[in-house]
Image 1 (cartoon, rainbow, N blue to C red):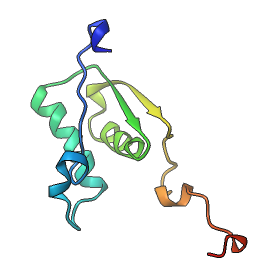
Image 2: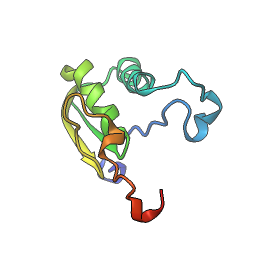
Image 3: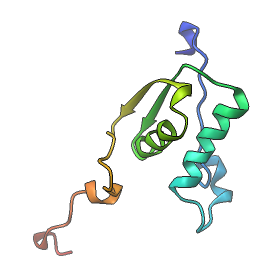
Length: 101
């Protein structure tokens, strides 16, 4: 994307990757949504295509709920938006008795 002249921001959420030292019990989905919202506000980003991969699909949905006027499009990669009231864990396959769990 950068090669094509687009400005790209890659974020690492609090408590993950190089920000693992910030992990604590209080870090949750709301923390991660706030991480992204603050980048939008600090960088004064508008008309943005926001991509979420895997768990970040839940994060970008929360970001879109809070600052929809900043976004032009949401992209879900290896994920999808969840229905209201559905927890991410509910989308995981459940172990069967045959698996010995």
